[in-house]
Length: 271
Image 1 (tube, rainbow, N blue to C red):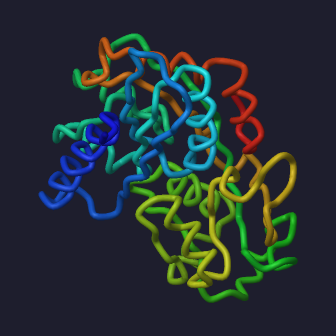
Image 2: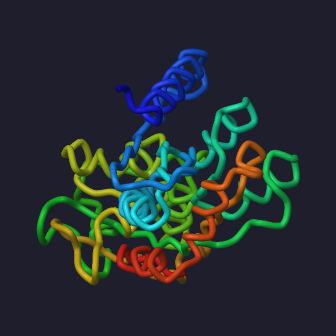
């Protein structure tokens, strides 16, 4: 017998495929979590648009959420700016976990999100990172030495972490000196991949992508002082398509709980 949840997930995938072929953003990708833990009779799926910086934490939270509630998360990871456009165009997302607080507020004002439910689920942090050991010094002086060829940055027009990277360069007076070396990713996930693949020797990424439980996950990095950029307050919001959906509202509540907060902190976020 074909699993009914699988059928529903396949139809959603087809819908998103048609949505992409219609021209709404070629840089976002779908990661579907179908979890096989026992589920209650009324278990649902929640379709979540998740900022790229939060991908690893969300995957871990999704597993615990399914184990504890029986509901399944179907996340799509990408840039907050692209999600804004896709949500307005009718993308089938039920919640948004953004990389900023401006986008959820804007969606709320424009009637695409449920009013009064926004909350900060994480405060992000920026890192300058290289996959090479001992390449990035703990004070970030490598930027002033300017001895590298490429610096990966997320698109500052679409990705809040990219905008924060520009703030740092401006604060250090290095924007013009390094501008010709930028390699721009559509989101911070792509900026991270540029560094991982060696297409850039170093890059500005989310700390959560390269740091776990108090240590770097390989390579070398500089935890950028938060005095050099505005706080990255990441907000969650229930979208209009998620209103009245048990799984969507349950996931938002779960993000406020102790188990999810512990996972979020382990990735270097503040809560």
